[in-house]
Length: 300
Image (cartoon, helix red, strand yellow):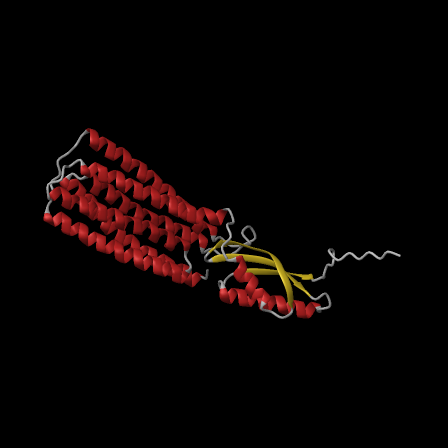
């Protein structure tokens, strides 16, 4: 990822941080005023959105550092580590919400719900929708794992807020207040699910999960006339830091110069199809036709 892209990601995270803080504070204030466990839980969830933005900003700051002798592949995985930290934060918040809901079951509180609080909740919900859609689109555009992970987190907040809003409307219409801690448990489920999704997405980078379709790479390579076969295709990394290596089999009589030009052409085509910043290593091997299965016996 280029430095200019890192700066754009930082700017987006900073703007979203401000929006998330406004949303979180609004929900927490409403939760305190009407004594709602579900809204307070939703506010805490929104607060983790802001916290994750801060973690993302720190991670991007480290990830944007240039390559050096100790880090010849760059510092890109700091962005991945930030994503895992966000997953851990979400998990802790989810557990805390569960304990809060259990306490509210033991000590129920009557809710004081006003039309103004519902209007503010709807307003914050709209902000979350705009933030989530914008952040996800920018994450895809900039190939930023931290933006994509953070947008998944915010997206879960949308469904949580919808659940809380429906619950409060239900209580306003006469449903029992016990539905509030029940909704809190639902909120915790969404938070824990978001934690798992963010964890799964980022841990794959650290354990070198395959990131490109092997068949797609094979089709690209085999489209070159000089290529006889291709094997040992491997890939790892993230959307903004893709590493691909493969073995290409060619005619043994192909010159070193032509082999080098072929490998370079293949690498450029793969970069154009997969990612322009991808690191592609093509190993050239001589192609030899084996006739191990053709055994002739002559009997006299």
